[in-house]
Image (cartoon, rainbow, N blue to C red; front, top):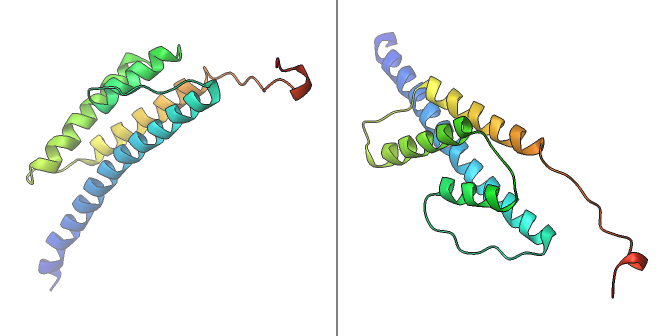
Length: 131
């Protein structure tokens, strides 16, 4: 029985890594969409329809808001996006633990770099706002 369980254990670990890797990226995509929608709302600007990959859209939004995230981080996220898209269509491709860790690190670096550039300007008191 033990001989039968070892391959199952490997399969389970492989499946968990694959699922976590894909989910992590897609959660980042959803978070960036919400983040930039919120920035537009706070700034009273409308968000135009952008074309291209999600990373192309993120790059455009960063430029629009005058924010910079290092090319290393953006390029890593884009490479991971391409791998994930390949994995969705190629049932033989499985993420490695290192690919998962690379993605998690790039996502953390993305938010950390962005966070250092944010400036909060509270709204003017109502009695000081122009009418």
